[in-house]
Image 1 (tube, one colour):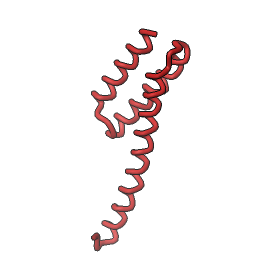
Image 2 (cartoon, rainbow, N blue to C red):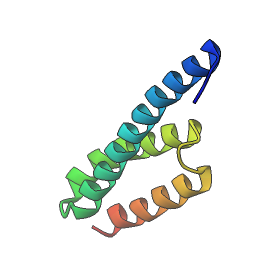
Image 3 (tube, one colour):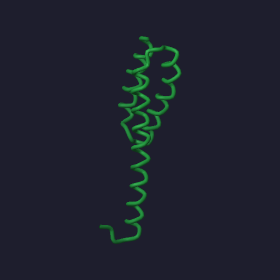
Length: 83
């Protein structure tokens, strides 16, 4: 257990950041799922920029690796193009 005030504060900050990061990661995963399940091309073309932006933000904050974000965007773009 932390004994110093600064260590206690760091634990509180880490907990807040962890919850926020999990929320954004789960929201992005749900958006990816919705995009992959969409069968209408106009709907998918509207969703793709939003999902792409979400992935870029996760990569920027180091929640996911930048190359994983790139690979996900590429596969989603292929899906949208194939509709």
